[in-house]
Length: 302
Image 1 (cartoon, rainbow, N blue to C red):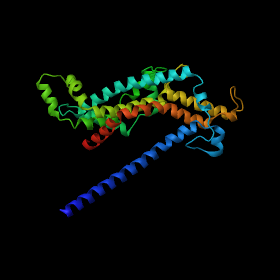
Image 2: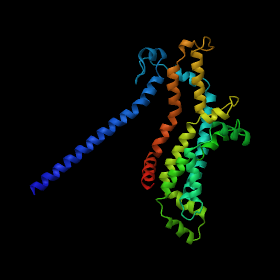
Image 3: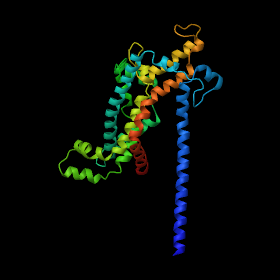
Image 4: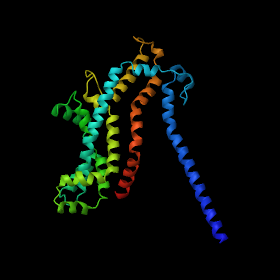
C-alpha cells in the first residue's frame, strides 16, 4: 500500500513538474512573440533623433508623438480610408466566405460528376499564373474597373488554398447527412445553408480570418487600379503613400511644413504599422479558438 502511495506521489510530482515546465516554455515563447510588437509600439513614440543615436528600443528614450501627428494630419482622409477598407473587408469576407464554402462543399460531394475536372483547374492556378499584364488588361480593358472599388474587391473573393482547406474540412462530414436530407425532400441549397454551414463553423472562422486579413492588408491592387484622383483609397495604400511622401521630403532639400532633417521617417514607419494592425489585433482573439480548431481539423482530415 505504501509503495502504491509513493508511486502516486511520484506521478503527481512529475505531472506538476512537466506542467510547470510547459507553462514556463509557452510563457517565454509568448513573450518572444510579443516583443516585436512592443518594439514597434515603443519606436513609434520615440523621437527621430533618439532613434538615430540609440537605435530601436522597447521603451522610448525620448517620448514623441510627432509621427502620429503627421499620420493623422488629415483626420477626415484617414477616417475615410478606414471606412473604405472596413467596407471592402466586410463585404468581401461575407461574399468570399460563402463562395469558398459553397465551392469546397460542391467539390467534396461524391455525386457531383465534374468535381475532379474543376478541382484540376483550381489546383492548376496554384502552380501557374497569367502574370500582371494580362490581369491588368482584363480588369481595365474587359471589365472596365479602373478607379472602381470592385477592382480591389473581386480578386480576393476566391483563393485556391482556401478552397482546398474548406474541401478538406467538409470531408469530415458524413455524406449520409446529405443523403438523409435529400430523402426528406430538402434541396441542395437548403442542405448547404441549413446543415453544412452550421457544422463547419471552425472552418468558416478560419477561412473568414484569412480572407479578412487579405482584404485588410490589400494595397497592391488598389495601387494598380485606383488613381490618386479618388478622395478615399484603402488604408494600407494611404499609409504607404504617407511613408513614401515622408521619405521623399526627408531626402529633399525643400519642405513646406517641417525641415527635412526633422522628418520622423523611422518612427512614422512604426506608427503606420500600429495604425494598420490595431483593429486586427483586437479582432483576432474573438476567432482564435475557431482558428486553431479549423487549422487542426483540416490538416488531420486532409
